[in-house]
Image (tube, rainbow over all chains, first blue to last red; front, side, top):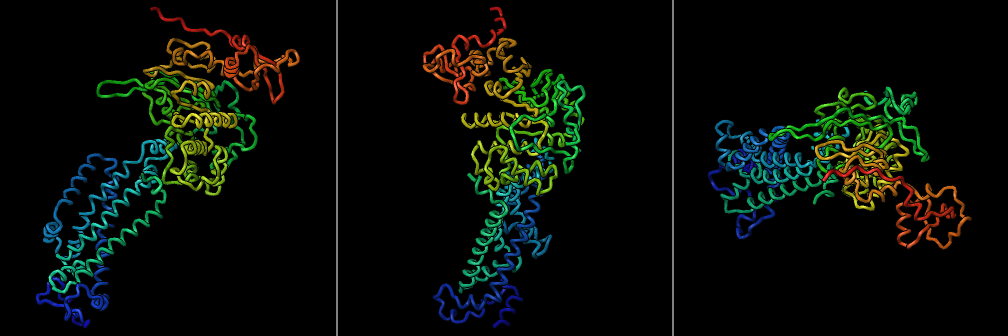
Length: 247
Length: 378
């Protein structure tokens, strides 16, 4: 059983020419059932779990890299009006390019690998991460900055100890949107290379047996919700004051 | 390191400044910069940490595309150490500009400002500001920090050890009349009045020799404002800071200021005098109208019934039928009571004992005649 699965995995899930049901057990004979739990439990270890972990990795790397780039860009943009406009334009442009077209565009340069996927995913996170971080930095009230400066904080201290801290809720809001979006976009990435839950979803689409599609799709949704919950929790810990000032 | 402290003031007119250079200051650790205010007793102490502020021909001109705007024109004035100087005037009078020049949030176009005899332009702005308490109308508390952490920010900038900073925060909360339970709360959980108390505590944290206050009580309701004004005056009697206090409210200026500087549009100093002088002898029409037509009543407010009713025996007159006022009440209050009761005299009591009477005639003649500016030719 597991040998056949390995074979399919080795051949690449998306590239299978002959329709396959893997070892679908009892469900294959009674195809009326839309969802087959026994398939899920027998394929959790070999298929679903690795897909889920790959998906989590793709998303985490993309958001983390996007966050670092957006943070640095927002810090520069906070002091340089022209850079702000330029970076906003660039990230908006990246955002408007359809996902698949973007993958196709960079694939000749970066190959059909993880790098291509991450490039695309990072590109999509930039706009929301950059805009939210910059907005957070800029929306700190002048009274707070004036009193910080008046008590003798250096500009650097004002940035690191005041502005960035007060921007946390806005930054986290951006990260939440970027993460949930990336979980969704990363499923499309399987079109380029068989990674993550997207690979199982593509398999499921081309199959009459829908359990795989539903299970993988459901896991993607759960992953997005889990990421979101972790981020909400993280904000509660890092910025417990945020819920007080939210109006 | 500490730029403003440990400096004697050459030619200090009051002679009080000599006190601040005593070894007692130098021995306070760490960094030797800060004296904690004594928490016991209310008796006035020597202004050991106050410094004189001197404006010398200070101007501030803003260049704009349409030309230059003068915010402050040739301001020269001296705020003696330990006194409150209120800057008052209409908007556009340059009062906030004048105040923010002192901690170099704004740089002067011309002239010099000396603090404790030393030009502030010889001091690094960041270091200068760390020795100046700064309170603004919008308070500007950090929403992401607890009250205790907010008050400790200046202490952190001065690198106080944690344990000592914690003790100082507790002391400051008591000083400004806040319950120690607020220490762990966030600013958003406090009322406006409480927030301004925290702002005051934060400004007083390192016991700075100078305080700049920009309409600190302007956003508060009248009752809270009066209470905070009174408490600040009581604190000031003890702490003796040199304070520049900006307000647009002449009544607040007259109440809070040892000296009041009236600025007019274009940043011109119209008059710099004590509240009593300002009311009795306004320099010109502008000041006279700015202090208001009821300046006679305002003058009465500066004197108490007890000061008028001295050396009279209660036995001389039967005061039992007269309306009573406390000796600590102002003459203005006394006049109001007289009017209310259609009375010609009041019984004055101190600590519940009758000490004499004051008559309407005495109240009316209590103050020297005002010297009003001559009305301009019509």
